[in-house]
Every structure is written in structure tokens, then in C-alpha cells.
Image (cartoon, rainbow, N blue to C red; front, side, top):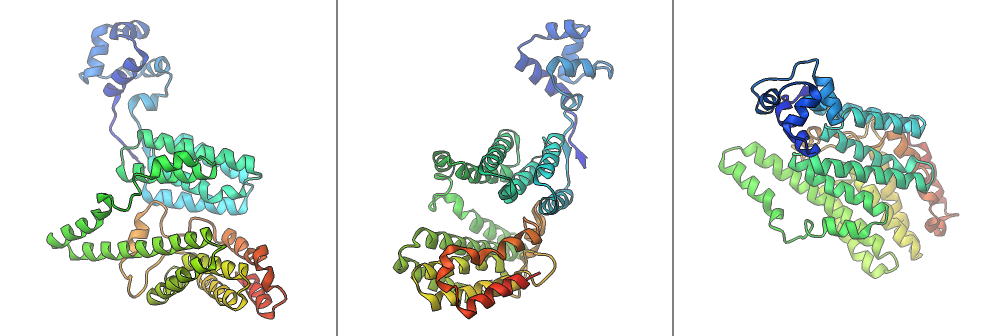
Length: 374
């Protein structure tokens, strides 16, 4: 844990102006001269230690806040706590774990990377809350915490990302107008900001930092594939009733998946796509095609759960991307506990849309294979 420099002079000025009191009024309350307050605010001297609690009480804040003490957690500590809490959500009573995370939020209310990961944590586990009303309350808590981050965080990356995170919460709350207002402009495909990665890669090359350029190229291509498959999945979901609209997308993504070996590179991503494709074909009574994609879905799950820990990783082609995963506060581990994901997976074929496959021996074998996953 590190501590920012003490900003007591700036804080006294800011707090006094916010409270709309003069130096003289503050001096009278504390029992010092106006000149003493002036020296505090210009940094010529510091308040005596016995005066600090009185100053803090006057401004209705803690002594830590008065001093400008900002507790910060290391990236490694944030990663560890995220995984610890994810495990607790999987194993323990939801409300107890939720209360514990909220207590940490209060303690580290100025550590914005940590607060951001708490929002991600809540978003990934809100489905464990009992009832839609409680879930809505948590989505609202996520939105409020995101607003706090937006208003106070000076880290541009976090400030930009939290806009999207808050939009996810608003979407679940049915606040579609707020989602559109927040994301419509920044998501325009023709924004010049979309070229920033290419410019950065060129700068790396010109500076002779070839490794950085290549590494950045790889993670950019990986993220583009991730976005392509994720968007295609949503496209199929939106056009589920129109097989003629879905089928070309399913076929094209199938070629991309095969070319980049995405079933091994990111089995979780491809499992979601194959599951959506299997649902689409089942809905239209295309049993053989549904079976083919359901089989790919099961294959991806075998890949996903083949090791003890679900980790984001590269492969022989994307051989420089893993460092990017470890650099994030969330780390390379999955955002939800492995067992929790596994429990959901085992119920995935219970969806009524697969009723057309019931009674088929192959379908029963697939369900049994899911049950055997550990």
C-alpha cells in the first residue's frame, strides 16, 4: 500500500470555500489567529497535531481526509482480493459477502482501481442475489459507485472504462436512454479515436521499440477477434427468428474460429457463440445443425475446464498477449469462480428451446458429458 503526498494546505482552502466561511471565522472556531490559518493554507506551516481532530470535525470529515491521505492498493493486492471475493461469492452466503465488499469500499473509497474492480465483481455475481428487486438494488449500487469514480478519478483509462461499466448497470435497470446518451457518441465507428492504436504502433516502430509494437499489434488483433465473435453472437440473438439472417453469420464466424483456433485460444468466448448457434438451429427445427454446434459447445467447455484454473492465455500465434492480461487489476484469471461457472454450464441444455433434441441419444450423451465436467 502506498500513500499520496499530504495535501492539507489545498484541502483546507477547498473545504473552507465549500463551507463558505472566511479565514477569520475558521480561526475563531479553532481558537487560533487568522494569520495562522493563512499560513496553513499557503503551506508555510502545519496545524498542530492536537488541532487536527477539531479541524476535521468542523469540516465533517475524517482526519485522513483532511490530511489528504489516500490509501492505495497495489495491482497485485487488487487481483488477489478480487479472486478471494469471487471465491467467497461462490461458497458463502451472498449477503454476507456483499456486506464485506461494501465495508472494503468504504475503507478504500479513494482507491479507484479497486473500486472499479468491485463494480466488476458485483456485476459478475449479481445473479446470485435473491429476487429481481435485490438485484436491481445492486445494479443501482454499481451505478452510484461508478458515478463516484467518474467524478473523482484522474486516471483517464479508468474514467473511460467506468462509463461503459455504468452503462451495463443502467441497461439492466432499463435505463436505455442513459445508456444511449453515454455510449452513442464514444462508440461511433468513424471516430478518430479508433485510429489511436495504429498511431501508437507506428510510434513504437519509429522509436525502435519493436517488441512493444508487436505485442500491441497482437493484443489489438486478439481484442478485435473477441469483439467480432461477441458482436456476432448478439447479432444472432437479435435475429433468432430469421434463420436466413443468422446462418451466414454462423458460417463466417465458423471460418474465423477455425483459422485462429479460437476454440482453444478462448474456449469461453467460442462456447457462448456455439451455444447461441445451437439454440438458433434448434428453434428452427434444424436438428443436425443444432447438434453440430452443440457438440462444438461441449468441446469448448472441455477445453475450458481441462485445467484447475480458468486463465486467459495466448497460443503459438498470439505469443505475446499474456503479459497484457497480467497487467490489468483483474489479472488473467476468470472474473467468476470456476465452480460457479461450472454449475451454470451443467444446466445450459435445460433451456426449453432444446426440446426438439430431447429423446435423441446424442443429446443425452452431451448432457451427461456436461455433468461429468469437474
